[in-house]
Amino acid sequence: MALFVKNAVFFNSGYLASASSGILAGMVVALQTNSTTGEPELIKASRTVSGTEFGAFVAGIAGDDATNSGNTIAPIDPVYQIPYMRPARRLGDYLDETITNRTNWTDSGTSKRGVTVFSVGGEFMTDQYVTTTSASGANADAGAAPAYAINDGWTFAVVANAGKFVDDGGQAITTLRNMARLTGSVSNSLLPFRWVFSGV
Image (cartoon, rainbow, N blue to C red; front, side, top):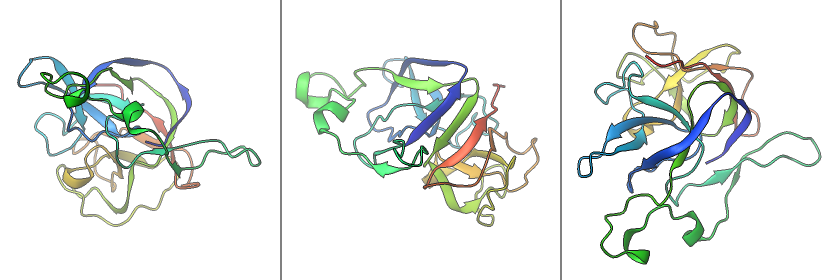
């Protein structure tokens, strides 16, 4: 999870996530149509999914978890007054966003409530980023590890790292859409950035 919001222009909480989405707060999320209900639902953004390569279906940054594994938080250090990432300790029933067979045996596992999405702009810190590689093309992340330079452009990753931020690797804006600009180096496992995505 670990998303620290310094400031944000706009957010909403109306989008539901599929039961198997694996979305964690701080990930880039996109909208798709649920194949059963026809309703909009959130998925991890991936540059290999048709239509999301240039951000066409990107909804914003997830502000909530939609899964109960891999959860983290970003509390403020009481001495140094800076955020840091730590594993989250939560009761499964409170974290479980899906109905599945606990409350309603006929439900297919849709979310109980919407996931907050920061969709316009702001400044954030997240632990949902790729540390070992960078973008090497429109649909590939095989570049060198990031250098974390201030103002460096970052976008969203592909395949196994879908939803996570990845250094754009110096790719042209026509190849991929820069969604974030770094505002500093990684601090306490959190990547600081300005969300600059404005839609397509």
